[in-house]
Image (cartoon, rainbow, N blue to C red; front, side):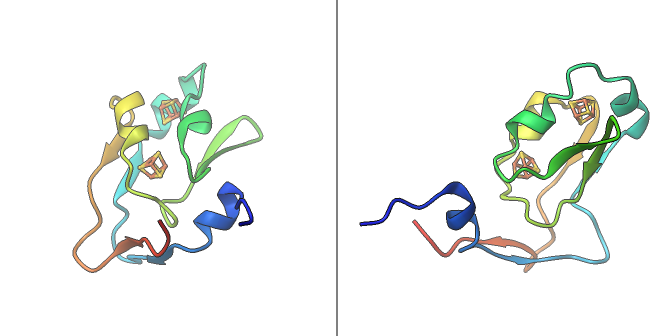
Length: 92
Ligand code: SF4
Ligand code: SF4
């Protein structure tokens, strides 16, 4: 049996994106002053990236694991997506 990469497994998921409400928002002022940018390293979906030293983030593709909310409660406002939106797992 072929061993799948993380990217291949993530590709099985389906996401229903809520265009009217983000379920995760960031305090950009705190992010600008943040030294370690831990969110870049902990998100299993790789949704936090660095671009020109600033955090780039989009909650489309979020796995709703809650890891970012635990490691950075001061800057991340987190709630589950509204009903019928969010991730649909189709593998494992
Ligand atoms: S979300 Fe938190 S860990 Fe990530 S850059 Fe902003 S303040 Fe830093
Ligand atoms: S809840 Fe999990 S998957 Fe979603 S943005 Fe945070 S760390 Fe990434």
